[in-house]
Amino acid sequence: MTKTKRNYVIAVLAAVSVTVAAYIILLQRSERFHEVSLESGTELFSIDPADIKIFKFDTQTFLLLANRREKGKNGFDIEISRKNGHPVEQCQGGGVFISLLNTFATIKAMQSSEAVTNSEQYTISIGTVLIGDYSALEPSQWRFMASSDKATVVANDGMQMFIVNVPYSAFQTLIEGCTRLSL
Image (tube, rainbow, N blue to C red; front, side, top):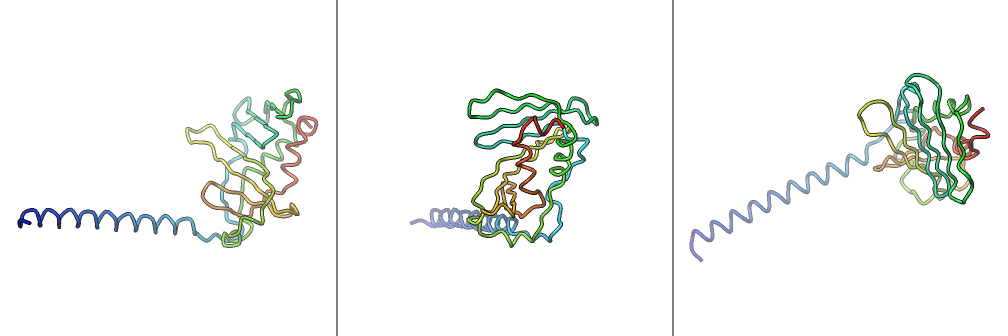
């Protein structure tokens, strides 16, 4: 092998080594990002309830879509589809619905993030909540699950799971549909 070819091979190997090292550093930082420790009471998500434009709750058998008619007002048009053939429900969101919006407007961690390391104990899939406002930002989306006794609710933001302040009963009220949400 000529000296020029050897120098070329050495330069290529050095470049590959630098690229691999940079990738490993980025991967380590990424993994550390997912291990961020949060104290109990830390806000994971917060929005002024008056700024909520859209609220969507989706499960395997149920879809609720609520749109605010006018920014800053309490009027929401709600449409509920049950995926088992029931007719679509439509109503105006009342005080019960507004109260639930306030519940979902601030999602807090109830225990440090280390407390949710084994997702196998959260066997009840509740559904996904999407909340959007009037800004150009993408809506926030959370997947909720509960423990088998429904005493603990966890939220997954796509990266990490947290035990949260949203009670299981809030989801049950949503599923009751217009007969409850229009009050």
